[in-house]
Each structure stands twice: as structure tokens, then as C-alpha cells.
Length: 354
Image (cartoon, rainbow, N blue to C red; front, side, top):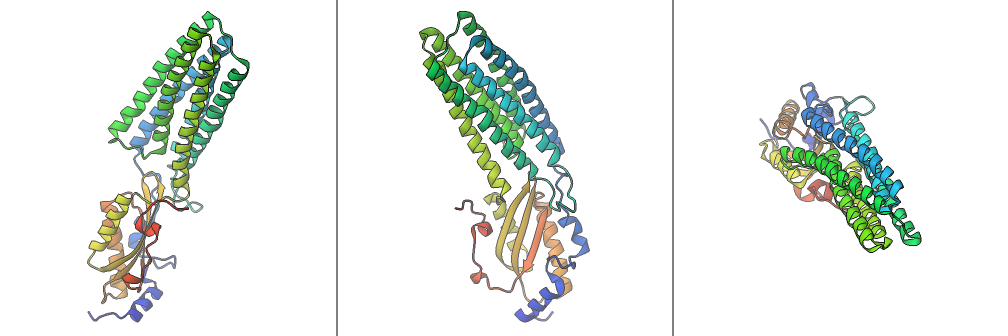
């Protein structure tokens, strides 16, 4: 096969030998470019859904008990915890919506599927924790510091009983979530599962703070202890909401794949005998188990248009077989020398930005 000049390669690209939206993409690769959002690990989703339902049931019961106990006892810490449980209950509804909607198949309006819905609903859950949990806890703590709080002995006893029951229920929900995490190899990449773990862990710590604050209030008669516990719960909730919201934001605006995954993809491309060099590699998470891969490559000389078409299909298939989550692969043949390619953070897989 005779050598192919740079000009000839440019002509090949113009005739449709690269994977661009010119209608000439090879039919044999249709399955590789068809979004597969909705064909992920449904078994893991079912387990996550059960975990969310357990957390929702626990939070609804606990929220009602805390609210009744807080009103009867006049306890700011208990009312803060009631707001926390209400926020968690609403967030579980968001997460159930995320699990259902993110698995919808791709359509003409959303050709890459609905995988990012999971990130969107997780962001709403973070906002719910911040507004309904953190802000209300700050309000209750500030009111207790300003006006004080008078409680009867029976109120203390009722409040501590409610908090003790809540601690047991929240611990059981947290154990269920952590058990699922362990069965999935310790991975918290699912934002729904990550949110449940964060909520339940925060709830256990928040209930503990409320118990300590109420016990010190009962022992000293100083409402400042219970007010401080309410403020501490507020700080805890705001911090957790910030961390969860930042993760969801990064994923919504187009977060690159993990550096390890990007390195594997680059290595697989570089190992292909028909690829002379990998100029640039761009990746983006499209869902829980879907990753978009766009690579600018330089092929070895001597490949005619039909051969380039066959090579493109084979390369995509080999990458998808090795890395199933890389289900959206686009190759762009370029004539630029490798030394002239500008490596951007997106091309190298680095994180960060202004």
C-alpha cells in the first residue's frame, strides 16, 4: 500500500472518513454511538432504591416524633433535629426521582440520555439540606440564645427518649447504606447513595449533639448548651450541603472522567497499531455509567478511506469492550504534528479551573 501524504489525508477527512456529523459514519458502529443511558447496572439501582426507601421511612417517623417532642418540651435542639429530618425526607423523594428519571433511554431531544438527572436531583437535595436543615437550625439556636428556653423535667425526659429512638433508627439506616457501599467495593460514585450516606451520618452526629446539649441544659439549667447544640447542628448541615452541592455542580457542568480512567483510554488508543499519535483526549461524565470520549488522533501513513473506516470501528469496539462505561466515542483524524497539540486541562484529564 503506497504512502499517504498530509494533503491526501486531508482529502480523506473531507470525504467523510472521520466520525463527524456528516451522515457518513459507518453503520457498523451505530451501536457504539447509541447512548446507553438506561442500560446500566439496574441491580445496583434496585439496591440503592431500597436503601433510599429505608432512609425515607425512618426520617418520616423520626421527624414526626421530634416535632411533637420538641413542641411539648420547648426544646430548640429537638426542633432543629425535626427540621433536619424533614429536610432529609424531602431529599429522599428527590433521590427516588433521580433513580427513576436518570435511567430513561435516549431520545431525539436528549441524544446522550438522561444520566445527568441523577446529578441534578442530588444538587436539589443539597439545597434542601442547606435551606430546611441548616438555616432553621441557626434560627432555633439564635432564638434560644436571645429568649432562653424553659423546660420541665418531663420535657427533658420526653426529648431524650425521642432522641434515643431517633439515634437507633438513624444508625440502622446508616448501617444499611454502609452495607451497600461495602458490597459495591467501597464505591461512592453514585450521587444518590453518597447523599444517603452523608445524610444518615450527619443525622447520627446531629442527634448525638442534640442529646449532649439537652443533657447539659437539664444538668445546669443553662439554655446556652442546647442553643449551642442547635447552632452546631446548623454548621454541620451547611458543611455537608456545601460538599454535596459542589460534587453535583462539578458533574452537571461537565466533569472529566477520573484521571485513572482517562489514562487507560489514552493508553488503549496509543497501543492501536494504526494510530501514530494521540493529539488530544477529552472525556466527560454523562451519567453514572456513561462517559463521553472525544479523541483527536493522527493515523499512520498509507491508509485509504475504507481502511480508515474499518480501523475507526475496530478501535471504538476495542475501547468499549475494555471500558464499558466509555460508551460514547468520537474520533477525529488530524494532520497536526503531535508536538503542536496544545494540552488543555480537559485533554489531560486534570481537574480544577477558575
